[in-house]
Length: 189
Image 1 (cartoon, rainbow, N blue to C red):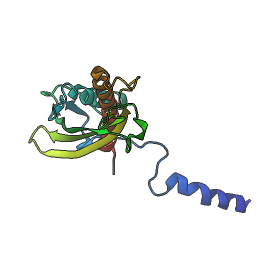
Image 2 (tube, rainbow, N blue to C red):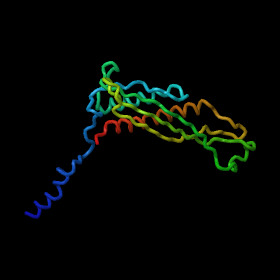
Image 3 (cartoon, rainbow, N blue to C red):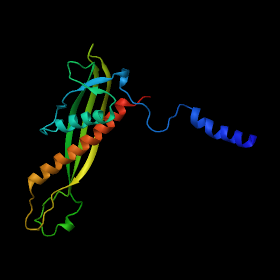
Image 4 (tube, rainbow, N blue to C red):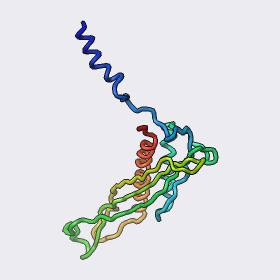
């Protein structure tokens, strides 16, 4: 009987009382325990028009889902979360050899995929004195396929497809980045 009790205490007590670990996600909150904040429209320092809405909407959605803080107007908020899209880079990737491109003219370059790199900075400021409470830079990279050319005679593709694919990938990357941003901002260490 004592052996079972001792075994129970040795195995269960560390899980219940030990080291401050918790099962599942712990309570999340903003730095300095703010319960409300304003998320302002992201600034866009790139040439890609209209992408700031993807980042702003994704961040607002994360706070709405988590209920960590109430989103308020800028004039009523004790803290403001500002974002800036620092860079959007698109790199064209081509095949290493032209052996697969026998029907294309010499010196032809056929892009097979694009590599998209984004960099965003978030800053949480206290409204009362403008002091920066938290800031971090987030970077992400993703590839997507280039428009596929159906026949060897035609060596151009629909530019609207590429524009649409680029914006769609930027939107998906914005959602992923703002999930990471929300998690890092609300983690308690």
